[in-house]
Image (cartoon, rainbow, N blue to C red; front, side, top):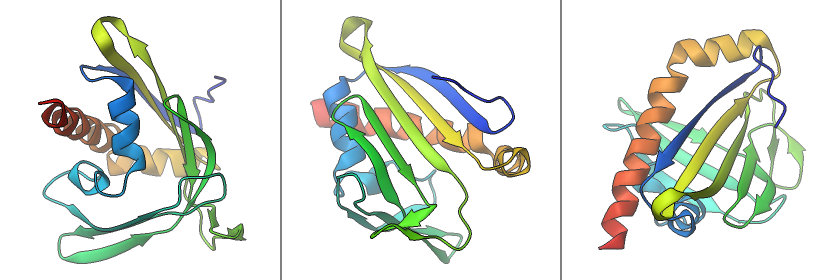
Amino acid sequence: MDLDPKTDLHFTRTLAVPRSLVWECWTSPEHIPHFFVPRPHRVTACDLDLRVGGRFNTTFEVEGNLMENHGVYLEVVPEERLVFTDAYREGWKPAPDPFMTALLLLSDAAGGGTTYTAIARHRSAETAEAHKAMGFYDGWGTVVDQLEDYAKGLMR
């Protein structure tokens, strides 16, 4: 993966849950509300159509305000790669003010876990810096912690 340090924010973590379960959590609307935004914020709606060009729409409640996020999947490789963006809406309709493209890369880790890489690609260095200042690493780090905890609960 060719990463641009000016426009791409990223991190890699090893999760103590199998890759198939991480994939299921990221691709099933019933699981998304349990981890997708840092608590105490919450997901109030999730509408997924898991296919290239299919919708990835969520609504968050953040400090009493609802925030709608509309996007599409650009790439879906089961249990390996999930790419989505807010640059388009379903039907390849361009978004008026796109922010980023997200890439999730999954691979097997030792002991039955998952190597989880999250990448947020931005159109400009300024947008990436703004995302970084908004708390990309803490926010997305919290999300992956919540994902791991939630997925562990599903293993029981």
